[in-house]
Structures are given as C-alpha cells and as structure tokens.
Length: 167
Image (cartoon, rainbow, N blue to C red; front, side, top):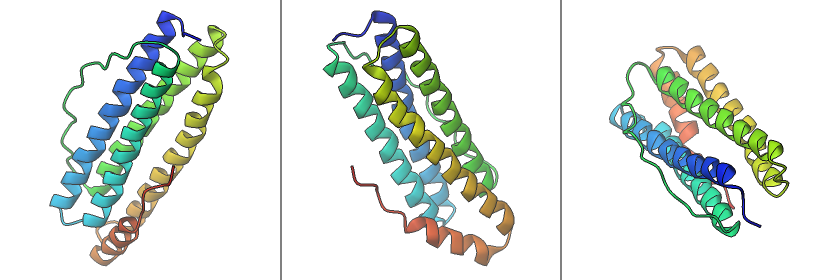
C-alpha cells in the first residue's frame, strides 16, 4: 500500500539523514585514527556501517510501499576538533538529531493513520534509545579518564573490540 506523498517525502528525508550520519561517523573515525586511537576509530566505523544499513532499510521500506526514492543533497560533515570527549559529544548530538527526526516521522505516520509504518519506525525509536545511552556511557567514561593516557588507551582498546551486530 502506497504511502501518501507527504509521508514518502519524510521517508526520503530520513534516508538522506541516515546516509549523512554514516558519513559523519566515518569522518569521526578518520579523525580518531589520525589521533592514534584506532579502537575508537573502529567503533565509529561500525557506527557508520550501522547508519548506512539503516538508510538501506528505510530505502527498502519506501520501495516496498511502492513509493519512489529520491536521495537528497548532503553537506560534507564537519571535521572534528577538540578532545576525544568532544568527538563523542558530536556523536551524541548526531544520535539525538536522528532520534528527533524519526520521532517526527513517527508522529507524521500516526497523524496520517499509516499503521503500516508505525511498527517499522518503532523498531528504530527503540534502537535510538540504546544508541544514545551507549554514546552517553562512553562520554561519561571519557570524562572520568580526563587526560590520563593509560585510561584513554584502555578505553580505546575496549571500544576497538566492538563487533558489527548481526542482522
């Protein structure tokens, strides 16, 4: 069943946002790796891959609903500056932006009585709670570590052990 044009546009906007998010995380990964924090870079690369996978899921859902896909223009992501904690603060802000966008999309689906979109979007909202919490925990640990090199290297090692999620 085809989505109405307004909702389909919002889904296309979300596809673009997820792709932009993927590129932003890739930029953060490159920065961290340049700083000698390859484990944190790995964590960000996996995050980038997840965002790309989310874009593909939104794309497929849009196509499955017999709507066209039109990926929008994306600006280059900002180059990270500041401390490692600042980089993860930017990651949290990125997640919060995505959460707000999906929440708005969910509200639009509710308003348009598009009951087929609601379960799909609910999965993403649930995941966003987990994503924000995970990044928040990393930020807390980075703040505790401060400028202590051994603590940062330990956290780098831990984050580098992250593996891609199945699915």
